[in-house]
Image 1 (cartoon, rainbow, N blue to C red):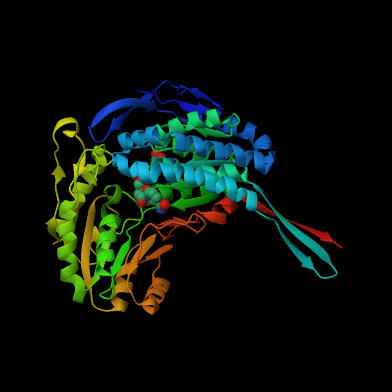
Image 2 (cartoon, protein in one colour; image 1 turned 90 degrees about the vertical axis):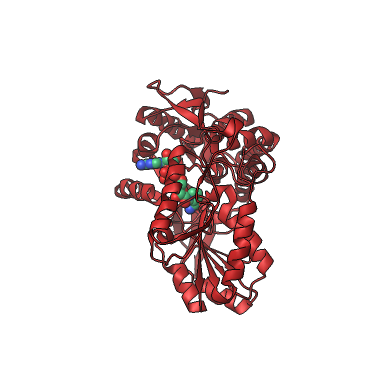
Length: 480
Ligand code: NAD
């Protein structure tokens, strides 16, 4: 098994202090490798390399930059099987999911921004008889990209691709819980001919490496995806230094089922939006709200299908729900199930740790869990659990559904199920979330703005938004 190393100035290095952390395979609950326990010294070297590479990378013709990013995308596709296996072993997700979603999306991210950057244009404003203005957008400098463990390579490339395409150089940090695919990605960057120092990857803990990236004065923009509490720390550190910030944070997303929905579609997609990736997707609809006339029918069918989901070895083709990412996270999820019971919730299915046999006997598995009987304001319905746990609650009117949906500090995404077009527009308009899906879930067009309202973050990723984030506008006014 590969020893993970930092990627700085085009080469792989041991951490300066020579310290390592254990990398655990969550399906087995066992250490299977080591990763650098880097610190501020490693970050300093990475920023130095990124700063040195900035002038030539940002001045490189777009077509040449684009070609390198496209070459990286092709290499990701070539290594699909290897990367998917690494992702599954590191994260616990079903191999099938990593092959179908995570890794294809990583190459799509690279390709999307490699080509998007070729279609940018500058604006010009003509002042009749007086002056002409033109506005340029130039790369902001060294960007810090910090990503979480739930969709490791998918979210890592979602930040790196627009940053590099915009002409920034990057110091990046993947989650310490899922470092493997970022390490494999660094090898692909070398193979694709990415110039030294353009991308630097420093592995290690958030409080050390992540904090050092955010604090470094030469890092001009921070693109972060992770928890809301971490986002607050980052914002507090970066604000006095006037860094540009994009924060993609937590969610507690409502899934609204109206009685006039296509019932089969609503149930089958809600199973996915509840339990895909073990419920460890920031966009999962963990609060299901059902119109009262359909409530019992929906609950019965939803529970029946939840019970049919196979929890098992992530490498097994039949597995729908794999392992949670770590023992600590599994215990957090189980503690929320206890909390739900204490708050008066009734567990209709699931609720316990799953103990498998063989290779996965000490893995971190939890049954998909459905809870009913809770009110909107309880902690179970207010706090992000980020696991295979959903609550289902009835509502009586459209107004009530909207007020329940909005009765939360988060505002990342929402899903609505209705065949009534007017209702769909009306409700979508009133829900305070950055992303609304009507009669679908996780259908993504990479050109659209992506991000949350309220405690779910600031800024938007996706499309032009991300390219704007990594660049600064400059207006030049010329008197005629
Ligand atoms: P986390 O906040 O614990 O960690 C995210 C990253 O930040 C990791 O790389 C971590 O090492 C680093 N970090 C930790 N402390 C830091 C600090 N002080 N300074 C800089 N970096 C630091 O989040 P997580 O547990 O890895 O991920 C789960 C969370 O991510 C959930 O809340 C989920 O909703 C959220 N998430 C949001 C989106 C989105 O697009 N909005 C997508 C995926 C996940």
